[in-house]
Length: 138
Image 1: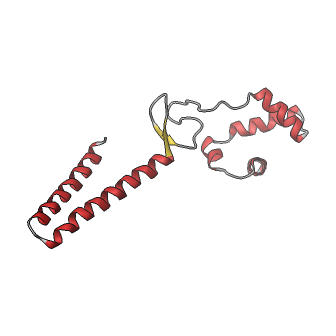
Image 2 (image 1 turned 135 degrees about the vertical axis):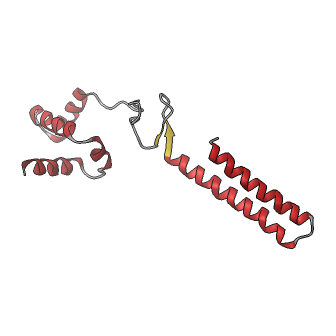
Image 3 (image 1 turned 180 degrees about the horizontal axis):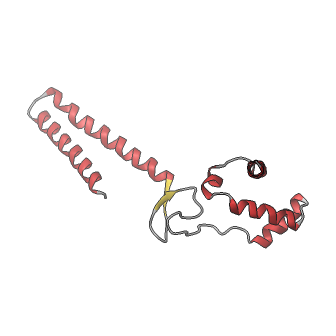
């Protein structure tokens, strides 16, 4: 556990103990402190649970990275291998009825695109490449 987490949990525990002491001493309002402590612990644990759901730990460098990442930005570890260039070219030729030269040209365009820009794009890749071509011509 990180130092800040320990300090937070310690503080909440002290508040709960004080509240229990007030209740034991006959103070009617003392029950508010333990209840507030429980509410704080539940919300804190929920926040950690949500954060962990969005991240994963790289098995190679132990960095915390977005769960959707296929390649660790810290060390380059690949979670899933993609298709080889030859298999991908074969697939594209069959599906799109394209020539090898056109596919090579598209691969060159893709390689020139910044990884961050590509990762942020969630639309049709062909539309993305066509837009990039128009930008380059200007």
